[in-house]
Length: 269
Image 1 (cartoon, rainbow, N blue to C red):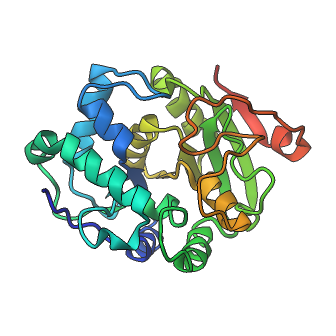
Image 2: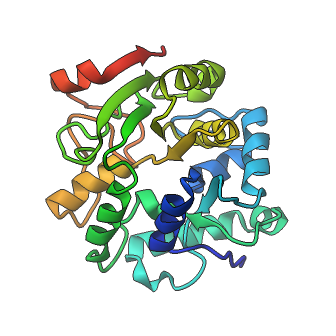
Image 3: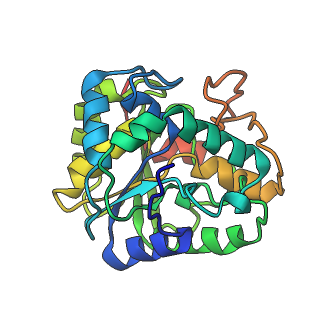
């Protein structure tokens, strides 16, 4: 089994804060795509897959932190479901994992998943506090899918100076990559840009970090925060917006929220 050197959540967040680094987080979905499979919210595309693999094999810099799941040692800190899932995932893709030219060190993908999969959930409080420091008193541009509604109904981004949003397709956002990146260049100057767009977010972080923008790929953080606030011990479906792992976005009843509507500065269909 491949053993990767992955920083802890605390170390990863400290690195991002210290360097104002952009972030590209890889998970099982990106590995699926690299291996040639589609995932629920992104159809397989060979160009996307090739770009993801190249990025995954690129060493991190103070400008861009590449992240992987911290599941390659000491997995007893996770619940049984998470342990079984990641063991099956790594076993299924063992050949691919052996072929990839891994970088010396990765940040932790779980900076946006600091709660539900842990056996001992008490560190989540400190993790969320540290995470919120990234956007405290800053102007924030959220770039997300149409069903995400990140921060709606909770105080996740309450410490931000201002919040604006670009709403993108909830599925196959890669088809609109150039349009999304152009919109971020227009509306994201001098802002912290937080992107929740699955595999597409990784390319956005890689591309726009090169022109000095700080792009943090932070998908699923909203679901984790909701679960944390309700003290959930299993993944509960949220009725009014996208929920992590409930990837087909069925049975969502959208609630009218004037603040959310007012924050939207562009919609990309």
